[in-house]
Length: 160
Image (cartoon, rainbow, N blue to C red):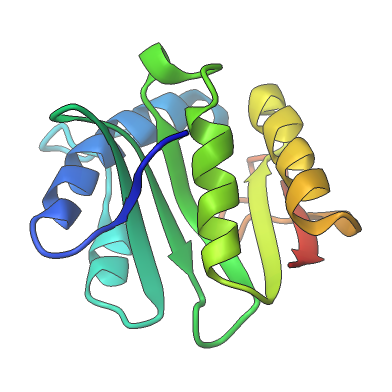
């Protein structure tokens, strides 16, 4: 079992650093490049950190942050996983599973969880999470706004 802590204050800076690794992991799948300063765009993250409509969560192992999640659309549902990442050294150790179920259970109601169609690991993971968290759920492809050159995202919808 892990200890999932809500993010506040300086925690968003930590999530911002982890965001760079998260976006690097996704770069090959979403055809993403860093900006001229070498960092990946984090405008969404900056917006979520200032919003009452989003919540961030961190998991630490000792002093080391090992995972984060951002839940968006808290007030104007359905809720969504805006971002989710586990350090490679802790993947397949149950950290992601526990984090996903924890944040979904903290926010009852309708949910939509999106992942990139070409990300086979994410597809397996999120479908298993949906089975556990929602029981009954639906799946549909949706085009990525403004990116006609990338495959559609896959969206899972369910309620807890």
